[in-house]
Image 1 (cartoon, rainbow, N blue to C red):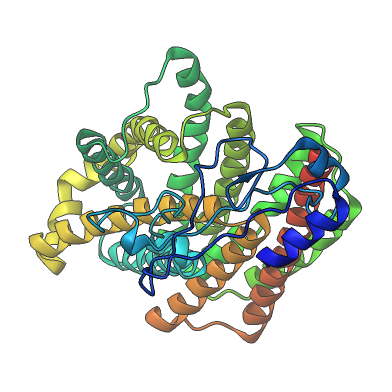
Image 2 (cartoon, rainbow, N blue to C red):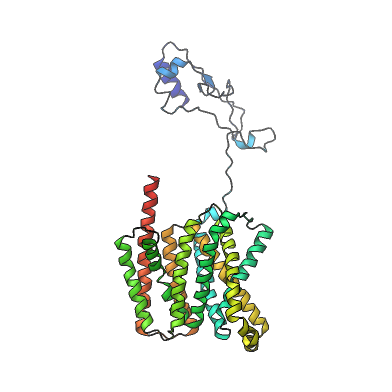
Length: 411
């Protein structure tokens, strides 16, 4: 290599003295290479193997200079770069260690999905078991939020995460969101207590329909005909399932529908309350405000009954320890699965999260039927399947449209 460079330089610049060849030190070891007559390579200098070249040689010799000018530097063994032999060579780059989350992102994301599904299924099963011996959904709704709020306060106290400050302006924006969250949560639990878990989730599959209607008629946003057509199977499937549902009653049905409307308005107000605060802190503040909204109706509607015989009946059936334990864990599972859903959304694209949310509902319906042994008619099963398929189609089309909008804005 060295001789080729010298020969080319000589042929293209006849008047230039022949460059002296470098001599290798015969006394070097196998892992240490030294050069004779080399000088330190200065920054920006025109050097080849430590020799200064005239500017005319660099300008007139295309074979020596590539389009991207590079300085050729000798490489020294790291083991013998210093007298002590313990330090790294100057030209050796240090590579930062790669953590587990960066090394296996797909595995971590899969774990988030698994925990989201697992916690949601456990919550729905334990929640329904509580209602079988303690049918007070207003009070249980308060417990759900209370446990989550205590969890958030403890997390703030230890700095995981650090509490974000809130001002009066943000508080005013979050109050409508928290109210809709509280109303939707309570009415969902009223439905869970009144009918089978599978039927409540089938009714709640109509939530995309209410979202589209609110966007079209309240926010004034144009909804493409393809989205409306994708919602037709959802409406048809829910109607088929409702007509032959063995556990059907109007309290459960109407409560689930009110829950859909409440969560729709929660989405609308959430868009108006967009903030730079992280999702964990936002959800904590919403939970605190929602808890304040849930306490009065629980006291008014169920307070007298709870004091007379509600608590006593539950303790007589399962015991004080199990009763308190069930209430604590159902609240913890409720908070954690909602937090995991938010964390999962931050790790994946909206399309992936939308499909995952549909699959989550399938898991909940399937496991609830297996655990509680709920008997469903053939028409109910077909209707539920059609409704879930319609939600999947709607979620896919909507997520695709959102991705195209983002790409258009970036372009």
